[in-house]
Structure formats: C-alpha cells, structure tokens
Image 1: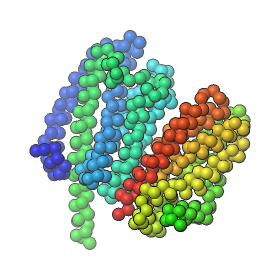
Image 2: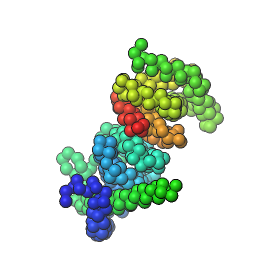
Image 3: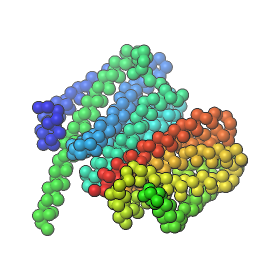
Image 4: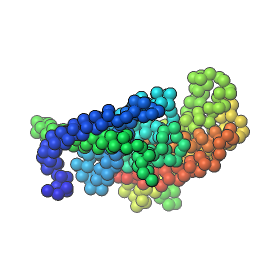
Amino acid sequence: MSLLDLANPSRFLKFADRVLPWLGGVTVVALAFGLNQAMGAPDDYQQGATVKIMFLHVPSAWLGMMAWGIMSIAALGTLVWRHPLADVAAKTAAPIGAAFTLLCLVTGSLWGRPEWGTYWVWDARLTSELVLFLLYLGVIALWRTVEDPSRAARAAAILTLVGAVDLPIIKFSVDWWNTLHQGSSVFRMGGSTIYPTILVPLLVMAVAFTLLFVTLHIAAMRNEILRRRVRTLRLMQAQAAS
Amino acid sequence: MTPLGALLIRDMRLAVRVGGGALIGVLFFLVVVTLVPFAIGPDLALLKRIGPAVLWLAALLANLLALDRLFAVDHEDGSLDLLLMSRSPLELVVAVKGLAHWLTTGLPLVVAAPLIGLLLNLDGAAQAGLVVTLLAGTPALTFIGLIGAAIAVALRRGGLLLAVLVLPLTVPVLIFGVAAANAVMTGAAPFGTPFTILCALSLASLVVGPFAAAAALRQEIE
C-alpha cells in the first residue's frame, strides 16, 4: 500500500484502526522513558530544579509550531487538490496545536516567575508565540462559524497560509531582536550549547511529544471522518423523511 | 474610463454617501481618543507619553470598523458576482477596492490625527511623526484587513470574527508604527529602523493582501 492510498478516507480509517493501538503504546513508553530521564537529569547550577520545566516547555513550543506547519501543508492540499482528507487533517490539527502552544506559554510563565521574576514580559519570542496562539483560536473560530465543512476548509486554508508568516518570526525572533528569552541553543550553527546530560532527555521528550501529537492527530482525524459520515447520514435521513 | 477606474470611483462614492459617509471613521477615531483621558485620568504628561500609541490603536480600530462591510455589501446585492465574472483580474479588482477603502478611511484618519493629537497634548514633532507613520502604516492595515474581509464575506456574524482573525496579524504594524512615532517624539531611539520596517510591512501586504483576498473570494463564492 502506498502513501497515496491513505488519501481514501475508508482506507485511512482502516489504517488508523490498525496503527493507533501501537502508536498509543509506543507514545506511553516514550513519554515514560522521557519523563524518567528528565527526572534523573541533574539540576542546573543556577536554575536548580526549575530547569526541568524546559523538558515540557521546549517540546511543546516545537510541536505548537509543527502543528501549524502541518496545517499549512494540509491547506495546500485543500486549495490545490480540494482533498477532503486534507480538510480533516487541517481541522483536527488546530485544537491540538493550540493546546501545545498554550502548554508552552503556561510552562514558560511558570518558569519565568522564579527565574525572571515575572510571569510575563513583552519580549519578541513571547509575543510572537502569543500571536500564534491567537491565530489558532481564530482558525478554530472560523471552522466553527462556517457550517458547510468544505467551504470552512477553504476559508481556513487561506487564513492558515497567511498566518504561517508568524512561524519564521517565532523561530528567528531571538536572533533578530535582543530578547530576554534565550537565543537558539539546540539547533544552531556550531552545534548545541546545551550540556549532554540535559540535551539527551530533552530530545527524548521531543520525540515522545511528537509521537503524542501523531497519535492524537490520527485519532482526531478518525473521529472527524466518522463525525462527517454521521452528519451525511443524518442529512440523507432528513431528506428521505421530507 | 477603464473598468478599474470606474470601480474606484463607484466604491469611493458609496463610501462617502452611504452609511454616514467617510467621516464616520474619523468620528469613531475621535470618540475612542476622547475615552482615553476618562479611563486613565487627565494627566497631560502621561497622555503625551502614551499619545502616539493611543492614536495608533484608535486608527487600527477605526480602520477595522469599516472593513466589515467591504465585500459583504457587494456580496448581498450581487455586484460581487459581477466583479468575479468581469474580465479584469480579480486580484486587481480587490486591490482597487482596497485602495478606495484606504482613500476613504485611512487617509481621513491620517489628516485628522494631528488635530486629534492636540487632545492628548502632542507637540509639533510628535504630530509630524504621527502623520508620517500613519501615512506609511495604514495601507498595511487596509490590505491585511482585506484578507479577513474576504474570508468573512458570506458569514452572518462576520464582524466579530473579522476582528479576531485580523487583529493578531496587525500586531507587527502596530509595534513598528508606534515605535517609529515614539522615536520622533522622544528622540531616544533611531527613527529609520522601525520606519523602514513599517514601509516594508505596507509594501508586503500590498502584494500578499490582494492575492490572498482574491483567492478567498473565489473559494467562498461559487
């Protein structure tokens, strides 16, 4: 079976039913292993135990951005090929991405209170991340406002592509502006500046969070396809009755 | 007269004659600015310090107010379908509608800003800074707003949704507009950097806005 075959909703449902238990299991194992590693990682000499917040904060920030990236790719699928599965992928990625972005903002605030002395500063990285969260809520609101699913998909796709401008702004905000938020320290020219005892658990957590996202996304897509089938059946029933 | 020229004149006539005319935006601008001293107290030194920010914010909201009906009215009376079927490229049609909107909403705000700035104790330099930054920045607000107006065109409760969709995208314009206006007033920070970025935002939205809005209109109206 090639990847393109999955574009058929029925085949996708079969595929989802087959992989979801495995994906869920792997995600639980990866999360348990990652959290265990994070707990075992040494405290920072300055930050003490608060550095452990980073094991949640950094992966949720990455996932929050990745979800919008996936929505943008799905938006192209919606606009260019008008594919219903792309609509479903874009719609279901939005709440998950919003949740990860919120998690990133909340964990960042909780870390900022002891380390920076404040829950919030209007720094470029924090502001652009908040804008991403607002964009997520806007897209979700748009999905809920337009009744016809395929029209909602096309409107949301355009908004998603326009909002994708925010992604490079978030990524490079720490390089372009002199921010309180620290600069790039994992993916940068000349290698990571994070000591391996912290970096390895962080990357394990990133993998675990990605698996969590994939699991939630496939499950949500399956639910959305089923929800649409129920909707179509109801419409047919109502037509037959009238 | 070319079709696009006729459209520009039609849109400007409609904006001036229907729904309270072009000055309703300026009136809204004035009312919002008037509310500020009531909310924070009539401290002239404080008002002067936050004056450019207040005026920029009020201009942003006044601009948004008029955007709501930009495509919705044409959609309701059917003229949008004619525009979609016309031989002129839809992107240009949308750009012309944006231009008409800016001429009837953005430009009056730019003209009124120095006068209304007097209410907030702004001096000559601050007023000049405000006019220059609003002149450079309001096109960005209009052309970013076009996208939201096109997406929300066929919605019954489009107005509120439009604000939610458009306002996050206008954050950079607000940041650099206020930064440049404040730089003129205080002289503490360089004016050129935020101002050139503001111009860049306007130029970029001039390109992106019409294409995205035209794409949204084509998708919405079928």
